[in-house]
Each structure stands twice: as structure tokens, then as C-alpha cells.
Length: 152
Image (cartoon, rainbow, N blue to C red; front, side, top):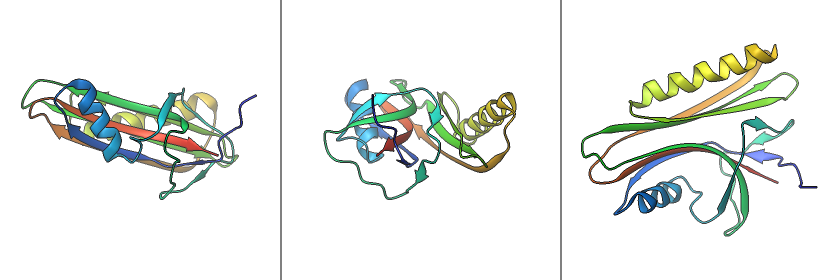
């Protein structure tokens, strides 16, 4: 059985690279999660998980992460990514992520709507909601990434 993460943070960044993978890697580095191995997960925040904005992850660790991203090689194109966490009074949480061809405000609004729908469907009331978004105007090959890394 895997341990349940107890801490998390929210991050978003953008970057350019020579290739799509380099752009993605550079965005990971800018988001403070470039030296760990992401284990992509679906969108449930473990009950009782605590937000820590300055959480540091050990290099090389396997880190459960919900993330949205987009890569584009169309110069001049505007791309954005956003991620959000909503937590109920009972400490049940949902994470939603987004990546698309839009601006930061549209990405933020999309995640906000998804979080609200997820809680409405579950019949929960929000105690806390955090959303972050980033946008990037592509020069050559650009990437936007927004993520919620979880840790123990």
C-alpha cells in the first residue's frame, strides 16, 4: 500500500525550449518541479492534506502530481495553463487542471468553473479554494504548465 500524501503546493510556469520536450522540461524547472519524477494522478486531494507554499521536494523523488499543460510551436500563439484546489469543511479536496489556447484569465475561469461543478456534484461546500494560472506568447516552442505536487 502506498502512503497517502499529507502536504501540497500549487505552481505554474512557462518556458521556451528547442523542442516540445525541452520546453516542457524548462517549464517544470521554472515551476520548481523539474528535478523530480512526476507520477500523474487524477484529481482528488487527500483528506487533511496541508498547503505549504515553500514545500521542497527531494531531487529524484517520485512525486504524485496533478497537472495541466500545453505545448505549442506556433510563433505568436497565446497559450495558458491553470490548476486549482478546492477543499470542503470536512477536508475533502478536488484538484482541477487545464491547458489551452487562451489567455491566463480564461484558463483561471475554466478551472474555477470545473472546481465549482465538481463540488456541486458531490454536494460539498467550499472552505478554501486556490487557483493559479500562467500564460505565454510562443516565440519558437513554448510550454505552459500548472501543477499540484503532493508530498508526505
